[in-house]
Structures are given as structure tokens and as C-alpha cells.
Image (cartoon, rainbow, N blue to C red; front, side, top):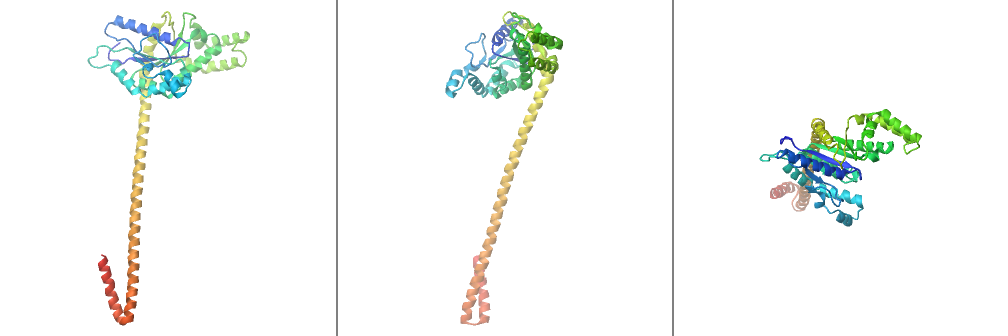
Length: 371
């Protein structure tokens, strides 16, 4: 791994019981062994645990959500159930995402005077997969990771349970496609527990439509879970998802024995290249669109504020003009009234000619005194 390349972030998601945490332990141990073999060229992986409800994990986490958020206290303080407390804990942790990213960038990005950096950042997530994938906090955490590091989603599947019948298999595939289009990051399907049952049957169902049809017909003949109306639904869905299967990377691994781990990391490197080629430009485009929208909102707010200020100035000028007009009218009425009273008084005392001359003089005097 060249020191100039940033590490790839591997986010492990999977349903409860799929062996996700054991898989995390296996790939962590594998990367530590590889780091020791490489000497000083590659540092051990940087590990994040984002499951606030787990009591213990079989690996050392560099960043652990449990160090920042107390899951049980969240349940008590907010009067929440288990899933609500996990979601709230993730929300609280996401408020510190700038600090988390600051640590990751400092420890993992290539820098001067740093001989080795981790080749991978591995992230463990809650077993309640919908809490992480479909929450705002999960989106914040993933988008922040993808903004600085190539990011790949590893969707862990319980192979024996998934291949038990066609309906369970199809449910897992639908969940995988929903995650892919929600997160919009490269994804690898990891069929775990291959030491119990091989992934060959599941892969064949994905790659060969006729094989999956035969499995559905066999279940219908045996009146198993996929029979009846479910058979026609599964047939239709398998046709729809055929194109989706062709663009997925699939590996079979055993977290217990370590089989398939090398294939998994080979798929990770392929997805790294796919991220750089296809996903990163799209992320940058979406980020530019978001910045442009923010800039437009700011400009609209400034324009609205300037317009309000201009309206206030125009209203004030109008009030001032009206006040000046009112004052002139009052002064004119006062002068006319005073002139009339003065002329009337002079007529009583000295005649019309004197009235005109004296009245005009009086008015001029009054006007000059008011200036």
C-alpha cells in the first residue's frame, strides 16, 4: 500500500445474527498480521465501533461510541426503548462528527514526516441495521466518511439462513438493493458462515435465473414457504433483480476459519477503484449542487433584507413629505385667519384703504417672524 494513498473505509452492515462482529474481528486480525508482515510500510487498521448497545467487542476500537454516549442513560433520560435509544445515541454522536473526522484525517491521511498510515478504516455498526441505514445520523456519518476517504459498504449475510428457502433469499436481496440505492456507495455482498454452508447455492441463484426458478418449483411441489402466490412474486422479482445482481461483487467468507478473507480484500481494492472512478465525481457534483443551493438561499435572504430596508426608507420619506405638507397647510390657514381678524378690527377703526395696507404689512411681519 503506497503511503500516498488514503485508506479505504470499510463499513460493515448486516442484520442481527449475521456474524458481523465476528467478521469484524477476523478482518481486524488479518490486517494486523499483514501490517506486521509489511513492517513499517503499513500501519494497523483504524477501527471504529458505532454500536452503542454492545456490551463488549472482540477487538480494540480506536474510536468507540460508548466512550461518548451512555446507552443505558439515554434510555432512562429520554424514556426510550432499545431501538429508540440506539437511534438517539447515534444522533448524539453525530453532533461530534467534526471531531471524529478531525481525528481520522490526522491519523489516517498521508502527511509529511509520517512513515506509515493505516491501509484500512473498518467500521462496526449496530445490528439493528435499519436504525443506522435509514436514520439521518447514519447518513451524516457515511457522507462524512465518503467526503475524505474511499468508502465501501460490506453487507454481511447469514448464508445458512438465507439459503434456507427462496423467500428468505429474496428478502435479503431486496434489503441489499434498498441499502445500495439509499447510501449510493460501492457495496460488496459478503456471504458469511461458509464453514457451515457454502455460498455456491446463493451465488448460483443470483447468476442463473433458471436455477432459482427450479428452486421455487421444488418448494411449491413440497408445499414449503415459497409456494402459492409467493412463487409468482419471487419469479417476477428475480427477473427484475437480474441486472442488479450483475453489478454486485459477491464473496464467500468464514469469519470463524478465515476462509475467503483474501478474496474479500481483493474485492475491496476493486471497489476502491470503482469509488474513485464513478462514485467520487457524483459525490463532488452533489456537494457542488448543495453549495450552490446554499449560496442561492443566502443571496435571496440578503435581497429580501435589502428590499425590506428600502421599503422602510421609502415609507419614512413619505411620512416626512406628508408632515411638511400638513405643516404648510396649517401655517397658511393660520395666516388667513389672522389676516381676516386683523382686517375686521381695522375696518371698525379706520376704513377700507387703511385696512388693506395695514393688513398686508401685518401678514408680512408675521411671515418674516416665522422664518
